Length: 84
Image (cartoon, rainbow, N blue to C red; front, side, top):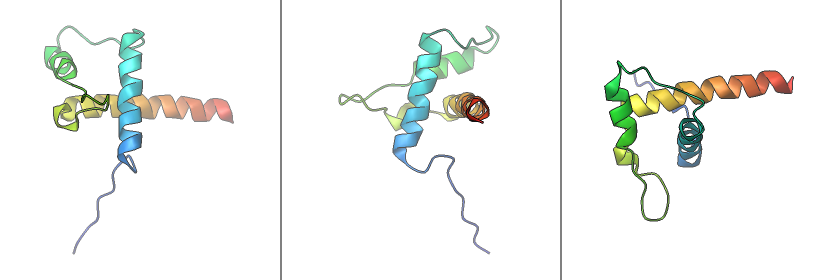
């Protein structure tokens, strides 16, 4: 039986949007990382952009992806709650 997997993001646009929101949250110091998790911080520092300003998807690993997915899903839930 073949099972189709769906992405959390319907297109690259939404994936990059989530990553950019995560970057803004870090720059605005809205999120902090434990000093005992240096691997996460190292992974975030390795993320690079292309000359045209878009994200280099090859530099985003699982740790970065899971972190910005969690942050953005929480943020979207809060935005949805305030819209009600």
